[in-house]
Every structure is written in structure tokens, then in C-alpha cells.
Length: 344
Image (cartoon, rainbow, N blue to C red; front, side):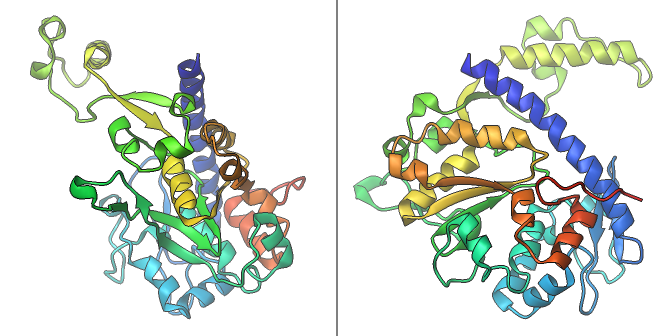
């Protein structure tokens, strides 16, 4: 039954993510007018912004000024865009960065928490349970203990957490499809895995080889049905697709876990004595459900209390008016109970 529930959540995740991408695409085509940008070659295309001397189309002006004035924050722009080949060349010759993308959850996170006065706002601190005077650290490198190696040697997974703010670790989400999957042998290789989680309650998945294979590599009972098709032979190509799907189902599967990022970050928070919060868009209830599936498997009561969730919309109510207007126009994010602006 748990597997059926998780498959249903996975199917819904694609639908919710695609819907949000479409809306962000429309909003950013309007927002990009008069701002340096390109569109990706994909369908639908994604708007990617090129920075100017003192501004960046993907950022709230005051937030970008704060980022530019802090070397440690500006280093987040070192991360090269993973899909750079799907983008036209920038006029400046500069390589595209992840933070240039209108779909970047990291850019949204920095737009909010790098804006002047936000981290000092009592309402924001209270909402997230932050009581220290520390400033946010973006791309914080955690030290998640692994099962000791030979001779008891201590090992760590230096995973990157989107933001650490005092005693709070944050995972920011926007259009990402899910929280990733990983093989069971990897997940169970964390030292505190069984201390923190009831593994029987975690969402499980069967992992198969992702590499696209040719017909000759399939088992005989599938290859003997294979027939070559011409590019315009729709029926034959649909038949081939069905054969590939059946062949993949027949392949041996490796056990794994869904929600890997959540599991790993809860373990990071446990190791550091921190709280952990997922920030997501209210238009992505699938992400909230996925987080609750992992959260209820946390068996240490104190750690479960330190697991939190908040939406960008709930945060928006606590932010300065100008920043709220930016989030509305560019992202369609408005405070709970309010109606987002119409895309022109």
C-alpha cells in the first residue's frame, strides 16, 4: 500500500512541477522585457538572465546589491549552469551560472534572505525559529558522519545544504521534480541512519539502470519482437516504446529510497544539533507530502520536533512591501489569502 501511495505522489509531482514551470515561464517572459536575457532551446523555453554592471534581471535590486557586497555570497555565482549547452551564447562570452536561471530555487532563496532587514526581522526569525545573531550562509558544507571505515576511520559526507542560518538548516525548492532517489546501500551507509529513522517507514523505490540501451542488449524474449521502423512510422515507434518499457520492468532492480535529500539533511541537522526546514511553493503540495512521508519516519521525538516546513507564500507576508511586489510579478508568490497579479 505504501508503494501505491508513493507512486501516486510521484505522478502528481510531475504534474505540479510542470504547471509551475509554465507559470514561471510566462511571468519571466513578461519580467524579462528590457532586461538582458536569453531563452533556452528547450520546449518550453526557460528564461536565463545576464548580469549588468550593478543589476541582475533574476534578482531583486536590493538583494543583488547585498550579494555583490559580500564575497562569500557572491561565490555562489561560481556554480556553472548544468544545462549551459542548451542555452545561446551570452553576448559577453560569460558562461551561464545556475543563479542566472529563472527556475533556480537558490536564486529565490537569496532574493529573500539577502534583502536588507529581512534576516533581522523579528517576524521572520520567529517563523523559522532562529534566535541567534548569525547571518545566513549559502551553500553550507555539512559533515554528515558515515559508517566508520577500516580501522574505525571517521568519514563524512560533505554534502551542500542550501542555507544555514544559525541553528537552522534550509532546503529550498521551487520547480524541482522531487527530492531525489538513492540506492539503499548508500543511504544506509550513514552512521546515524538507524538511530534517527525507522527504515520500514521511509518511502522505498526500485532503481533500474538509467542508461538508454539498444535493442540488441535486451533479453531474447524482447529482441525477437523488435522491428526496425522509419522515422515517420508512429505505430512502430509506439510498439518499440512498449517493448522497452516491458524489458526494463523485467530487469533486476536495486532497492533504494525516495526523498534522499531530506534523509541526508535530517541526518546533517541531527549531527550538528540543528533544526531542518523545507521551504517550498504552495503550488507544490506534492513536495510537502513527500517531506511528511520522511518526517514521520523520524523516531527521535526531539529531532522530529526540529523538522519544519514553510511555504514561500507564508514567508511573503513577513517581507518588505517592495520585495513582496517583486515576488508577485516574477514568481507569482503572494501572501496566503492574496491573489497573484495577472500576467500581461
